[in-house]
Length: 145
Image (tube, rainbow, N blue to C red):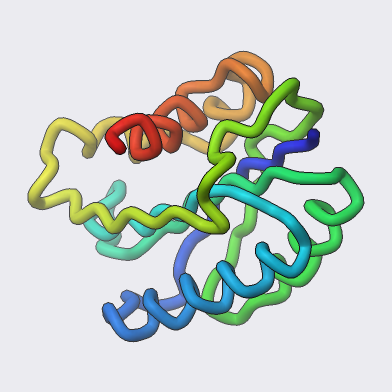
């Protein structure tokens, strides 16, 4: 199995309907490519700007993960797509999710504000694909079930 974890900046604040559309498209595509994973949309003040960020984990056969990610990178709804970690994993972390989803509003989660102030470069240096603070954050949603 192969896993890819990335972070990006939304080109605008996303409405619930737009997030639902992204989620539905992701689930269809992931099911077609036998991928699993999780998508999070974080909205709030990060540094000086109020904006949205996406975090996504994709898991599956390496070629399929990379092909889907190439399409994701070209999506107009986000920019500054930064791969945080990618590599081989022994088992899927999100094995029963075609695409899990969480929306987080930082104003309601003040304890997370500092976490999202971290520079992507710092997150990239944190551990390997199996042991990374951002991946652990994403896995926490799956563990809640």
